[in-house]
Length: 335
Image 1 (cartoon, rainbow, N blue to C red):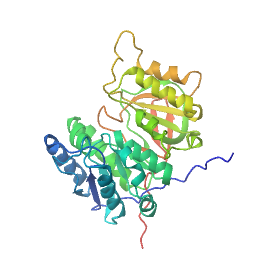
Image 2 (image 1 turned 90 degrees about the vertical axis):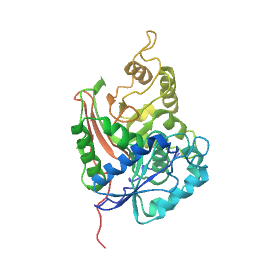
Image 3 (image 1 turned 120 degrees about the vertical axis):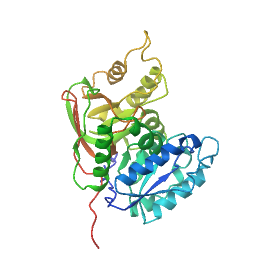
Image 4 (image 1 turned 60 degrees about the horizontal axis):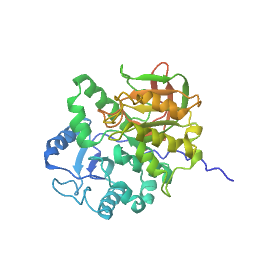
């Protein structure tokens, strides 16, 4: 049996000051009550030095069931942004439950011809994982526009907000590796050790769903990977079950390390009969002796550290450090 070759990361071109970033409804709709948060997200992006535009489907009150529009309409708008040479990055307005409806409608040739940063988490994890599988595209598992840049960021201390703005701007515009991500006291060593490997991950349930589609990552692509994940809105036993799926599928046998985000609204973790999240993780890993770093700030619980899918990272769980060892974008070439 031939092994699936690990792809070279398809890095988007670095952004320059004044480049156009489009906020798009890639999943859920915009509710009118969050219009001020969206406006604040525009301010944040403009402060980073970018021009900002809203995509047409990003209109308060527009919706189809739980989505911004029918799946085919979302795909059409997304593909138009991918094909538009003026658009240099796309950030999702919010998450939701829509991406599975158009995974097969995405213009992957447009991505390979002109790769662009696509930013977001939650339901957008599916885009990062599937587009990485299909094209090698580096996906920016990073804050969403409305609940993130316009929401959680605004509630953060001023120093933290400024730190995140610098980090995101550097990640999108710089052709050098970021190095160590800023740590906080919340980070915990759940199993000591060191590892280096490509970052692969996202929302845990979306990772399991992606692997159930025909666009799944080949199992060999998890060889030596640093698996990162977070979860929200489920019960502790569901987290355990999702991890068991990754165990049965062989993913946990191949990774070199794991980084776990701050849990958000996971029921039962504080119940007397339920173990803490660290114990659930270590139970699923069994005797697999890999480093595990927990409670890292990415995902639904608050302002996100960026976790670029497909980029090599270095993990030292005992020292509670996580470093991006490669740039997520390629330099701008003069023509």
